[in-house]
Image (cartoon, rainbow, N blue to C red; front, top):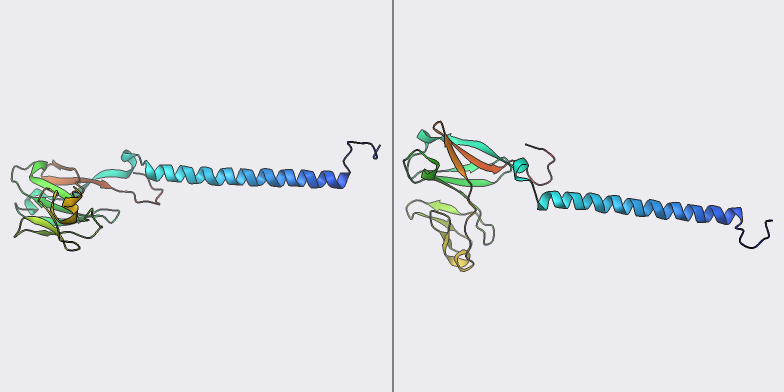
Amino acid sequence: MAGQQGDIPAAEENIVRREFFSSAAMVGGLAAGYGAFAFMAGRYLYPTEAKTKAWLFVTRLADLQVGDSLSYEGPTGITIVVARHGDDGTATDFIALSDICPHLGCRVQWQPHRNRFFCPCHNGVFNPQGKAIEGPPADAGQSLARYPLEVEGGLLFIKVPVVGLGSSEEV
């Protein structure tokens, strides 16, 4: 019956079967690759706050006087300027601002004699609360990123990212 219409010789049948499984494997590999990419992209575009931020110790209240500031480096390498402007012993005495200018990412510097943050890249000026008041950041309505603070038992704590991009660690 090998010569009847509709019959496929064994050699051609093996080729068709091989092409089918080869195509199925390729489609499966692409689906797995794109699925993994979508998962990783979603994880970093929409992180879960509980897993990426934590309250960490900054300093004792007694070690930072009114008018003083300190540079705090978080676990992910971000640098934050913490300044004290009050003496009530509460978190409202302090402010924690990123030292990165939102305009072009340059480092800002606290100038206590002028009571301001200054960005040397384009002469950007920020008030003590981090709001831009001069230069390109002011024109764009930008402000320095602010971090929440808490006081407990005479100690100052800050809520900062603890897991950087590309890390699989969980808090």
